[in-house]
Length: 414
Ligand code: GLC
Image 1: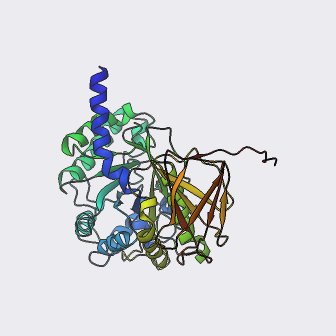
Image 2: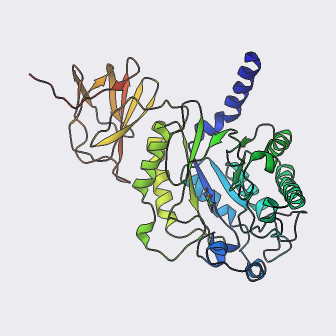
C-alpha cells in the first residue's frame, strides 16, 4: 500500500514539475460581461433577468484572434502559462459545444474562442489552462439541481459533457481550473471523482485545482497570497485592479504597480507557490492599457532577476522580517530582495551560514563580505539602487551551508 502511494505521489511530482518551476501565469477572464464592464458578477449583482442578459450573446463581436495579444504580453511579462475562462458563472460557453446553443460559435462571435486561445498559447510556448465554472446562472438546472434529483442528474451530465469536450477537442491541455461549486455542497453531488477520473483518462498529465470540492493537485488562495502546508502545492490567483472581468470605472491607482506585482512574486516564491495574475480583456478582446506598462516592466525585471524566482526553490520560512527587504532561498543560496536600497552598505543581523560570495543580480560591482558572529556586513554595493525598473534589487548570498536567520527582540551587549 505504502509502495503504491509512493509511486502515485512520485507521478504527481513529475506531472507538476513544469508548474512548480513556472511560478508565474496569466489568468484571463473574458465573457459576455466584458460588454457591460461592471465586473463578471454583474448578472447576479444587478439581478439582470436571463432573457435580458442573453441579448449580450448576440451583440458580442470580438475582433479576430485577440488571444495572440494576451499570449504575447504574457510571454513578455515572464509568465509561463495561461488559464482562460471557457465558461464563467454567466453560463456562456466560449467553445464549440454540443451541450448548449449558448456558445460563441452559434451566437455573436461566430467562432470558437477557446480554439483561438489554445492556438495562441501554443504559438508563444505557454502551457494551457482551462477555467470552468461549475456554477451556472443560465442553465435551467443550474439552481434547481440542489432541490430536484432529476435536475441534478441532468446538470451533472451537462457539466461532465462540457468538461469532456474541453479535454477531448483541443489536444494537449495542461490545467483544469474549476470554480464555484454552488449550489451542490459535496463532491458526491457533483460526482467530482468520476469527473476527474474522466479528465485524467483523457489527459493523463493534466493538473487539476481544488475547486471541484476535492483537493486534487493544488490549492487556490484567492486575492491573498498564503502558503499551504508543506508538501501541498498552491497558486494564488490575484486580480490586477480589483475585478476579474473588464472594469473600466476606476482610478489608475486601482491597478497594482510593478513593484506590487514583483512583491507578490516574492511572496509566492518564498512559499514555493505560484502567482496567477489576472487580466480582464475588453469586449473586443484587447488588453486594458493599464496592464501593458506594468507587465512589460515585470518582464524586464525578471530578465535580470530570474534566478531568484523560477525553478525549484525552497521555503524561505527560516528568515526574519527586515525593514529593507525580504527573502527567497534555493539550497545554500539566499536572495535578499532589497526594496529600500540604503546605499553602499547593508547590515543583516542573526545570519547563520558562511557567505562564500555576495553579488547583486545583474550587476558586476564587487561586494565585500564581513561576518562578525551573526552580523553580516555587505560593503561596496552600488550607491544608488541598481534596479531602475521597480527599485527592487536582489542580493545573492552564496553560502557554505543552508543559510538561515534568527533574531530575537534583544540586542548584543559589548
Ligand atoms: C471567485 C469569483 C469569480 C472568479 C474567481 C477567480 O470565485 O466568483 O468571479 O472567477 O473567483 O478565482
